[in-house]
Length: 347
Image (cartoon, rainbow, N blue to C red; front, side):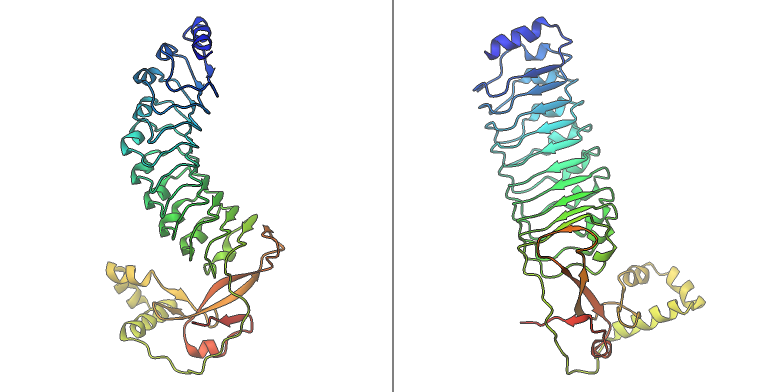
């Protein structure tokens, strides 16, 4: 049947644009495929393929290739010659590794689907696929994602559910065009502050992780959908502190003095800091106390405030108040804090 369909396609001439050999029980592809120079769409899903013939390299106009539900153990290296490819489906295979060489030729790729494979990691060279808009690696064995993935400036969707991811890189803040981020059913304990810099993010799914509290600037995100069921979210349990005084390091005392002087427009200190790159880098990590508004550097008390998110977005069922991290600069502020701020008990 496959040979007959290919022969019929070849009779249509080199201008044939689409060919489907779906669910044909193929173990290898019929010869003559490389003669179809005008082919733009090739569907080979639901077969038994484990390799591609070398003549595939001739399909330089191919834009869509579906190799889903086959027996590939790695991504075929012939794909790097398909320079016009825009959509690549490799879901439902046995892929455990990706050669970095693959990324040299797929510069026009817009969609990459690697769902339901056996990947333990993604090569950092994935950043070469600079036109990617959608990456889906659901149901694999990833424990992390490379920070280089966060340099894909056109990425709009990132699907990473049902993996073993423990943490996200702070560089995720560089995905400024991302609209959909799916991280459900992983092992994430904490979301990076950089997540709150993704101003175009509309859908965030972190259901089924180990998250207790969300980043400080979570309210700045204009989310339309947020899913976080199945996490051990902090509850409204009041915690008091007996301690009244803080013992700050000399470094922290100096940093707070400098930050206060800069806030008060100290012209001489401002000029001195501009000439000291190391000091600039150090002070760029400053935080702001949610009670008094004063800046501090590296010593603080962690609290939680509960934000009502039910009104502004579609959320997990039964989620009314979202626990968001709040930082205080001292025990003095802790003991005078607003009633909406709760201390975090350390077990």
